[in-house]
Structure formats: structure tokens, C-alpha cells
Length: 286
Picture 1: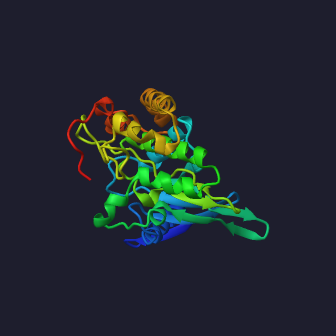
Picture 2: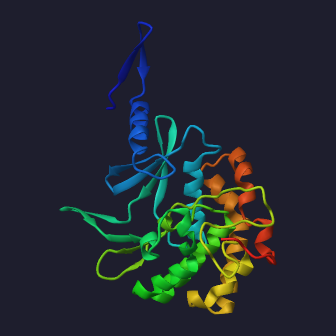
Picture 3: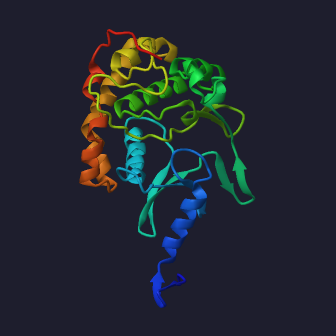
């Protein structure tokens, strides 16, 4: 049975939902973990989860939308982190399963994990952005991965997916490799969020994705397919199929996990934007 908590306000006893208190406490604790969103580590019978909270100044329900993007990515053939949305004190909280921890009878086993920031020997600072690159990252990934062809193709799909949902938060800290035993491989995808933008002709990713720099269009994504160990036909097929899947199903996926109609209208412009199919003739700035 859940305990009740009471607050004294103006000399009157008013019931307070303990889940609300817990949500407030987790929100405050979560602000110290770093990153753009408040978060905390929680545990249930299945293991450890990262709890990500909506902020008071959010324009839409980030918890449900990020959950929807992880499901959409999986439908597009990506390997993603397990996620779910739970209500806590009347608020939606996104839970992301920690794939770097394995629950055993003796406790938690910790997997080795290295971010792309370390692989690329770079930094978060703006002056190091020339090394923020999918093209450079796939070279490093092929060097360390136990299955280089598989992981290179997976990274290509993630790059395409980020372009198709206008995810500008695809910086090197949001990519990683993991080793639960001896072999290294690309970690499951995480932090996939749509970012609607005013421009319909050109949008950029956080990382360089081809000959035109950070330009998030099909021509640029396809300009370095050999680096990803893909033939031109294989790469074109991936791009075409993913574009149709994202364009045709994002709304259905979002609504299926409780994203409101109003929030769908707010993020609609993020998906398969018109400029994705345009050739960029001007040089791209880094």
C-alpha cells in the first residue's frame, strides 16, 4: 500500500501525492547528471534505467516524442536502446534501459564503453568541430569493431535517420562503442530527437556526413558510401527505403505511444523535409 504524505498550507491539511514528491526530488537530483535534459538513474526488477524528465519550458512532450523516435528508428532497421514512458506524479518520464549494465545474481556487470568523442580524439569545444565527422568515425569504427561491415552499415543508417528527422543533437557524445566481453561493437542508438527548423531547403547535422560537410541531404549522405563499406546500390536503397518509412509512418508511431495531435503538428516539419532531395551547389561551411 502506498503511503500518504500531507502538507500544511494555511493551517489546513491538504493531501499530497507521494509520487509528485518523488518526481520533484528526482527532477532536482537529475539536473546534476549533465546533458540538456534533467535525468537520474533508477532501478526496477529488470535492471537500471536512465530516467529523462520533461522540462517546464519544453515546447512539446519530449518524453513521449523521444520514445516514439526510438521505435521509429527500430522500424527503420536501427539497433536502439530499450525505452518506455511511465507516469510519475502526473508527469511523463522517459526510461532508457542502460545497455552498459547487465543485472546478475551477484550484482551488475559493467560493460566497457567508449564515446565517439574519444574515438575521434576530439573535444566538445567549437574549435574541434572539424573532427566531428561520420566519415572519420566510420574509419575508426572499422578499425576497432569485431564486425566492421555490419557496424559501418549501421552507422550509415543512423546518419540517414538523423538527417530524415532533423536531429541536430547527433554530436560525438551521442555515439559510442561497447564491449560486453572481448569484442567491440557499435552501441545501441540513443538520444534521437526531431528538431523542426524554419529552413525547408537546407538543414545541417552536428557532424560532417559527406563531401558537402554537414548538409543533411541525400546527395551528401551518398557521397562517401565506400567508407561505410556499401555499394552505391546498397546505399541508395537504404536512403530511399528509410525516407519512405519515416515520411509514411512517423505520425502513426508517434500517436501510438500517446504523442498528442498538437505535438504532432509542432514536430511535423522535422520529417523528410523538402530539401533532403535537393542537390546543394554552394559549398558547405563547417
